[in-house]
Length: 334
Image 1: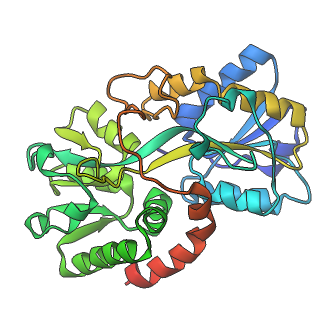
Image 2 (image 1 turned 120 degrees about the horizontal axis):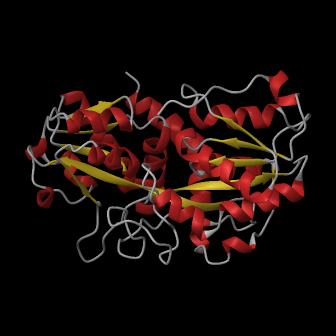
């Protein structure tokens, strides 16, 4: 979904505001929430959104560039890896929000520099006119010869597919993760496995019947579901005596150490991490998964307590992401 471009710096300095929030979550889903926060609190908020072409990294680099002349108070990110880097660089302030008391510890920075909420899951989208969802089980099925030339995923060099690839090393171990990714690269060279430009492209390829199934995110799957496409969702790696589980990628929020409006920043974070906001995001077109099982959600949104989650150290994945990216570039850049 296309987000609005950054506001000009002159606009960033014009007029008095009570809070500045940089937002990597899609504007179509986040803008109404921020407007509601304004209405409920009376605070004047300036929200600045990412440019689609640069995605999250554009906001991350902007925050770094502005370190000596702070403008931003809060960063609402749509993933976690770059938040780990910002925390390590001393750019985020610790804040243990009371609203996060019931958020599982796995989704929280040990030093309280960021907190995760409202997640996407890495899942399979299956075109039910091309394959039976009951025949698809785990990531290893991507390399099964019986699915040759009928499956795909995004190239694991950007976005959640890069994060997923990096997470495999944490969850599966070095040798198993490397063997799987090398298998993906080899299958692609043989023409047996397609590598799409991104998760949305992969979703459309499966939706249109050009592939039988593939790996994507739950929000992209939901777009196809809402359009009435003949698709089904399969949560990978849920069966067997020791299932590996599926990766959950939460939104994250953190306060900048140099926030010009720290009290209002804490107030916004408390509001954003409330169960009511997670519930609203679950009911949005993005179909975000509440990280708290008690938060109400529609039936088509996954229940975090009813699926096996990938056992992953989010901080480790974030710290290793750059090195994993360098490795993957050697494997997947032609």
